Image 1 (tube, helix red, strand yellow):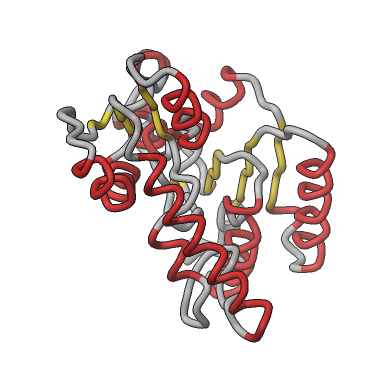
Image 2: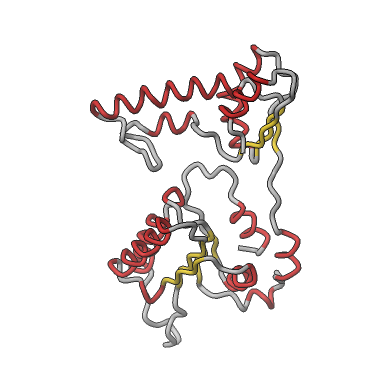
Length: 250
């Protein structure tokens, strides 16, 4: 995972032993530092105001400086995406250059179940007839995945596209939103409960389905029948779900 401080600690005691890191997401990034401003994005947007915000900014910059220094001690650095690689090069690059690390930061994409999805889901014109007017979001129920944004956007979409009947007099097929994700602990379970309350408040409960800890066959079923795949995370570092959407033809 690239625990930079632990690796630097190990390097201090065992300087001749090579160290390596596979970084999924930098502990802090240049985007995070900028997000504290009023015009910033993400979970900490606008929290840099006032005395508390000033202290937070100073702490984050100090932490980023230390993170850059200890990251420079790692001999082999791999990242899971070009986004992560760019931030790691910016943060760790100067320190690595000073220490004359010969190996550049490289990108090693994580494994995705693309082959199984391609084998299981047909992308023929005939198979496309089985797809419904469904938006699918596959993501862990964590704050940074921003399910709230999708629920509010879906509610606005339903309001703006409501059409009781088609020109032929038939009812328009229902539009649905399916949220699939894992629940790690009680905090995640509470988050799902709050999202259900929000769906009720937005009056989209009948059009919204929550599925927690779904099996892979269940995920395949929804990939096969959905029409649109969504991703709402700001600064998504890789997005395995997005790769799965593409493999399934969404």
